[in-house]
Image (cartoon, rainbow, N blue to C red; front, side, top):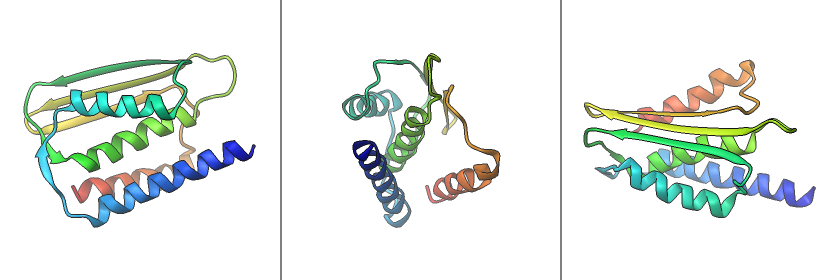
Length: 138
């Protein structure tokens, strides 16, 4: 129980530091090649999480160049993926995470889907409000 609580606290602190840095540091705009970013992030996730029980699918369709702040893109991906891993349903259900990224005409659409427990409706506006604030600052 202590290990589990320590891991959750460590992850929470990491996410808060990422969020703080992403809101306080000026944007460093560069070209984002999502295939490379996702591959690097997946390497980090594999060292952090036991993903052996997950069916993970990744689909990246980047027809156009995309420019943004690399570290903020990583914060977004990290938070979405981390939540998908940590908030899975208990039991024998198949654990699925799907990441789809589509870039067209300088717009990137990032979709992370899973079959986890979801976000309680009463917290959705708060959670998605934070995400919208982060995106505004990009």
